[in-house]
Length: 105
Image 1 (cartoon, one colour):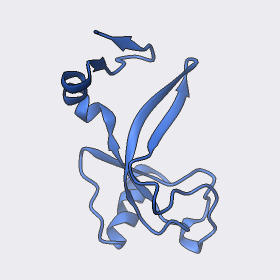
Image 2 (tube, one colour):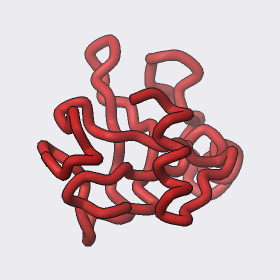
Image 3 (cartoon, rainbow, N blue to C red):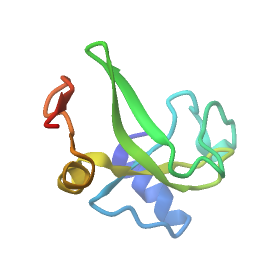
Image 4 (cartoon, rainbow, N blue to C red):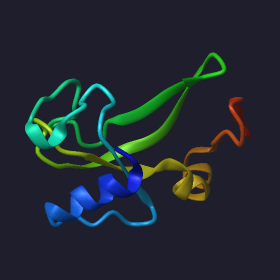
């Protein structure tokens, strides 16, 4: 399922995905409309990270903001980079511009 299809599925649950968010369904959840769940996020997971292992580093890409039907629905994440200036100004941590880790402190 691509991003646009995921957004359309969110809309069927009356959930809007903004430009500061993105929608995903686990690739291990091949038929979400038929309720076969494999590795989906569930209630209580809000605020949890979406991380990817890139160039031998774990990079946080998102934070769970909305879980729709944990047994088969999509998960909506806030895009971390949309808050890069706030994160840098409040924590002194600079988000990577590539896959390398940086800190200005």
